[in-house]
Length: 69
Image (tube, helix red, strand yellow):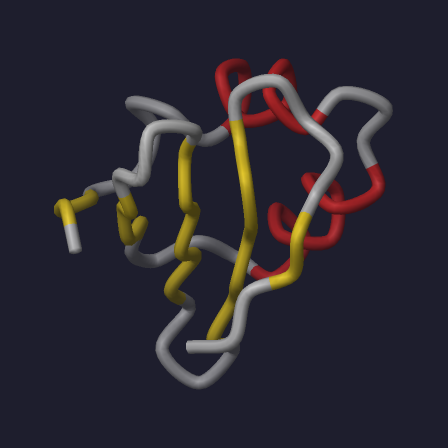
């Protein structure tokens, strides 16, 4: 999955696959996680947020099933 680099203190890059509704996030330190069943609006709002990390922690973390890639 292609990811876009973001300006964040927590996140390095974010990718989204609309066909599978999978959000992929690379964190500082190198860990990559995939979040499943994420609606496209969440990806759009994450990318538009003033703080990607705050949006992620508030709206995505612990809200969608995930695994470590």
